[in-house]
Image 1: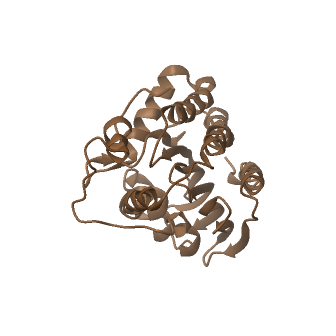
Image 2: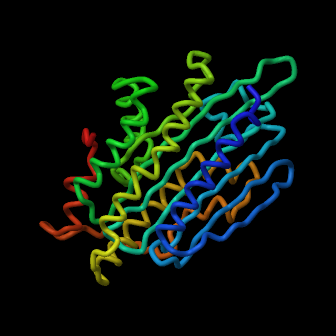
Image 3: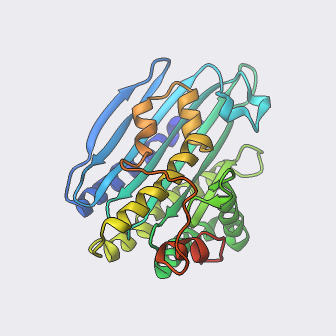
Length: 302
């Protein structure tokens, strides 16, 4: 499999998503192309202090190197020492309004190369939602969009597998709580030779193309809900969990940093305003407590 055969789809996905988000926000994304020492580069598209998005980024990267980073070989030690190519689109959007959820989406492709051996390739990706003051209809809409993307590529069983994988992956073990309400997550798709290229790439494309339909209707409904200092304060507190996950557990962040990627582009996922408190607990019966009791628990939302 030639990784260059999938590159046009990744770059077009980035272009299309940014175009739609710019129309929604009303402010243009900054465009920042970069080259990576050692091979490759990318295009970072970022918005800060927009009309709606407090911060967001939609990144494309295509990097290569002489040795697989530790984050990529921790569960595939047989690939240690191989040359690699990796490319994909990764986005994180942090709305200013606490009634509008943060969202993450990533689709990617890896190829591990070695002289005299067949290339080992695989796809990964997914999307997940992180609300602060959630609405059940919004969470159900997001999950139904995820399910609709997967069904043609594996049916109910595959959707259930990727939904459960997301619930387990986006979980802060040191806090014993999920980051948000989940969505989809998959990795190593095709690496075992059991999933063909067309199926693996087809599922990856379906997930990437489902993002706008899964997210934009939610923020269109909630963007004008009034909020105050209390809601912003809780949003900043919960954003701290987002930072903790990305820096401690996230495979993409670890791979980017370990492979010598561009730090500014990797850490564009961080929220701009964050707070931590010592042993804070929500007041019983409060809207903040409702997030923990009704939403930060695995459910069959779709």
